[in-house]
Image 1 (cartoon, rainbow, N blue to C red):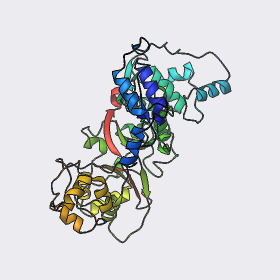
Image 2: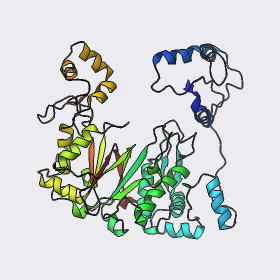
Image 3: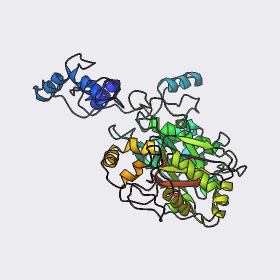
Image 4: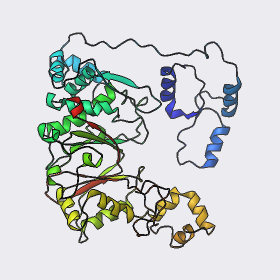
Length: 446
C-alpha cells in the first residue's frame, strides 16, 4: 500500500526490480498528520487509482491467483550507455544535456574527450577502475561508476584537474547529495588537510559564498555525480522533496580554517581519527541551515546554547555549528579548551521546549498524566516550560555533568559537530540540523 502521490515512484521501482506487475493498492494523499478517523475512512473507501473498494482490493491481491502476466519477474536488462555522443554544435549539445536531466539547470562545460583526458592525468588511477556505487535511497537500485565517469562530471562542473582527487574521494563514499525523500534533505562536505591550500580553497571571508572556484565547483560536482552516476534527481521518481532545497545546487561545501583554530582545538578530520597531515573530505546530512547574526551582552557560548535549545526541525536530535574564528576564540577564552568540551557543555545544558517534548513523546505525556515521575513533575511546570531532556546526547537517559539535563535512551555521546571557517570579520556563526555521516581520504585517490 502507498499513497496515490507516489504512484510513479512505486511503479518504476517495481519495474526496475523485475516485478512490473506487482499488485499495489493506493490510498488518498496525504496521510501525514491526518487524524486516525480520517485514515480509517480512507481504508473503508475506494482506491483512488483503480476506483475499487480498498479492503476488497487488498484481499483479492493477497489471495487471488496470479496470472501468467502477473507472475512475470526477472532482472531488468539495459543496453549500456554509449561512451561518446555524435558530434554536434555546442548549443545543441548543451540543450541535449539539459533535456536529458544531466545538468543542475545551469550551463555546464561540455565534457570533450580532450578535457576528460586532462582531468584523468590528475590521478594515478586507471580510467576504467571502479570508484564506488550510489543510489538515491535504499529502495532504489545502486549504480556503479568508474574513474572516467567521475572525470566526465568533474569537467561538466567546472572542476580543475588539481581538484580531481578530492572529487574521487567524494565519489568513493557513495553518498548521494540528493536523497529521494519528501523532506528535501541538504548535504554538507567539509575539506581538511594539506589539500585545502594545495588547490586554493577559500577558508576566509565568504567561505560558504560564491567567491572561489574550488569551493563552488567541488560542491557542484557532488550534485552532478549524484544525478548522473547515482540515479538521483529525477522529480517524482528519484527525487521527492516537496519544496526542494537550494543547498542542493552546490551543497554546503567548505574547508575548515585550521590555521585559526584556538589552541587545543583539533580539526574535524583529526576528531574523526585521521592524522593532521591527511587530506580528507567529511560528509554531513541535514535539512536546514541558519546564519545567525545577532548581538547580545551575553557570552557567545550562552547565546549558542539558547539558540540550540529552542531550535527545532525534522532533525532535532543532531546539530552542526559552523563558527567564525572570532567566535571560536571567544568560546575558548571562556574556558572551553576543545570542540569536544564545548559540545558537551551544549548537550548537557540544553533542554527541550515543552510544546516540542510533549508533542513528540506521547507515551511520556500519558505517564505524566498518570503521575509517573519524573514526567509528572515536568508536566506540573506547564506544557510550555522547557523540559530537562537534552536532544543532543544520542538518545541516552542519564544526567549530564550534574546539570540535571537528561537524555532519552542509553548513549550520552553528543550529536553536536563544530566546524571553524570564515574570515574573522565579526562574531557570526551558523547552525543547522546536520549530522556527521562519514569521511574519505583524498590521498588515496592521488
